[in-house]
Structures are given as structure tokens and as C-alpha cells.
Length: 180
Image (spheres, rainbow, N blue to C red):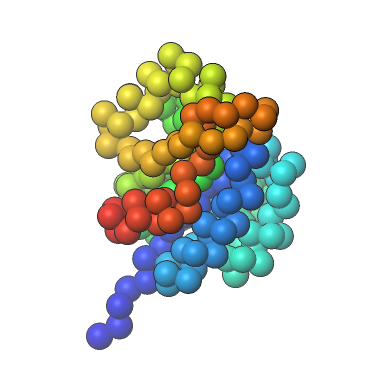
């Protein structure tokens, strides 16, 4: 009997830690997950979709209103096939939007439309991470069943050492395997 391939949607946001999403994607593929990437528009300024398309072997979804290849409501069809939605790196902005139910891009619409578990890996400046609003959003999402991994302490994009670095790829993979 064939084993069902698990489908992961990898949501990528505009954190400087985006470069780690490439390694994470490669490792997810090595673990035999089917991975579809959804990039926020802002993240395209840091890494172009072609990189994630090459690594995943799949189309990368960016714009909410891009013309679909076939008629279907893309965020709904993506949500339906997901076994897990992993947002890594997750900015304070995306965490706030998810917590507030704001659906103004492909990633937030897909998360809202999905019944799959969501794992969020924050990566941002320490001041942004410990901000009372960000922490309240994380508490709210955890209470709603969303899972979090990290961040960890390390050298931040601003040059300071602090809490806000994306969790190590291996740590994220362990959390993924706990969920699916």
C-alpha cells in the first residue's frame, strides 16, 4: 500500500532570515514532504520566487489576484490540500494579521481557509518580538491552537545579540514531524 505524501505549505515572509527558508525547504523535500511555497509580496524583495520554485519543483504563489492556471479559487484549493501550514520566517506583521483575522494576501487567506494545523516560526528584532502587542498576538494564536517554534537568541540583522533569530532548521523539522 502506498504511503500518502504529506503536503506542507511553506509561508515565507520578509524577514532577513528568509535565506534559512531555502535550507528548510530543501530538508522538507529530503524528508519526502510535498512543499508548496506561498511568498508575501514583501518577501519577493529579498528572494525571488524562482529560487523557491527551483527548490520545491512547484509553482510559488504570491499575489492574491494572479491569474490561475485553471479555474479554481487558489487559496481555497491550496488550503484544502494542506496537511500543515508552516510559516517560516514569520514576521511580527504576519503574526498580527493572522491574529486579527486579516486576509489581504495569499498566505493569510490560505491560513484562514484551511483546517490544517499551523506552525509559526517567528524571526524579527528582539524589541519587536517582546513587544506587548506581538506577545498578545502570540498568546491569542496559541489559545486558538496555533503552534510556535522559536525564536532563539543570536545575532540579529541590526547587529545586536538578542531573542529573535529563526529557530534552527533541525528544530523546526522536529516540530513539523511532531504535528504530521
